[in-house]
Length: 232
Length: 102
Ligand SMILES: NC(=O)c1ccc[n+]([C@@H]2O[C@H](COP(=O)([O-])OP(=O)(O)OC[C@H]3O[C@@H](n4cnc5c(N)ncnc54)[C@H](OP(=O)(O)O)[C@@H]3O)[C@@H](O)[C@H]2O)c1
Image (cartoon, rainbow over all chains, first blue to last red; front, side):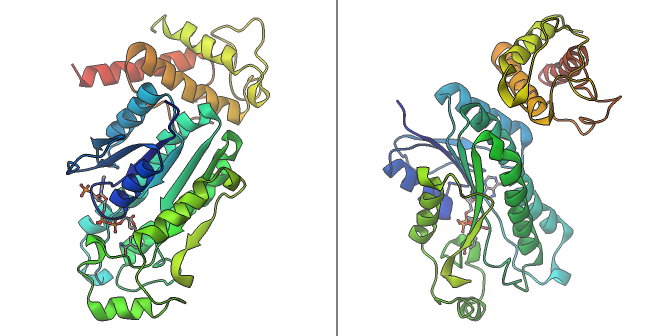
């Protein structure tokens, strides 16, 4: 009955899928969402087909969580899209999509989740950003700008939500083998990896480890921080 | 204005008593200033009230509205001035949502 309730966005595949499975294994009740259906079944997991930038959809999802389980302990804003292209070749519609999913989506979930966490006077929010922000990676202007915005949101919300017992932190993975980076040429990835202190791909476990750290009861004094993997 | 919204908001204000430095006056009425110079709520109290009113409306009427508003802190136009103005604003939003769903 008193399983912690963990909400993860973008769980159909990639990092989000792994995190959903990871927290189910740790005994959490996991709620996930993505624009498409979730293939297969996962015990103690409920999937919602919701676009993270759809305000009414997000509100309804969080309201359902509150009514069904009466609590929300953790939120991971993982859903994200990228556009790997020179700025001069990037259509406006792509810029809008990237900002809407990555920034607006993260904002909406933080806002709605915090309302529930506030009544419990406890909550942990983790937002996904990327090492491309400190590396100022060329060829991904819209994506990097969107993730820089996610970082700023994290830092400001950490202050605004501190009084309610909610911590807000960010995590910046290095390239991790998912569909998100499938279209990036190998030489570009190699150059990127070589800028890390530890030049290898990131794994899902590397990411889950940082989230576990932020979720620990002992991490209640850690907020507004961003942890980059790989020594960036 | 929907009359049922006033008691709903008053109840939420009473539940805030003692939290975030909120002291609810004994003679709380629909004209009591909530926010602003003579208001009984500081900004955290206001945030809490707005959120708990949203949740109470969702629970009691099954309608999910967002009371967020850019005029929040404007002295004269804020929908959060008094219980009455908040009730009027909420009523208006509920009507909009119900209108959308037929
Ligand atoms: N992989 C990397 O190298 C890397 C590096 C640094 C940071 N990251 C960050 O890690 C996060 C996850 O990336 P990933 O590599 O796992 O990507 P991915 O494999 O492409 O998966 C993205 C997930 O997000 C969902 N999603 C996308 N747009 C959505 C929307 N508007 N609403 C709801 N769900 C949406 C997708 O499902 P649907 O298509 O069904 O919606 C999918 O489940 C992203 O925020 C990304 O920026 C990744």
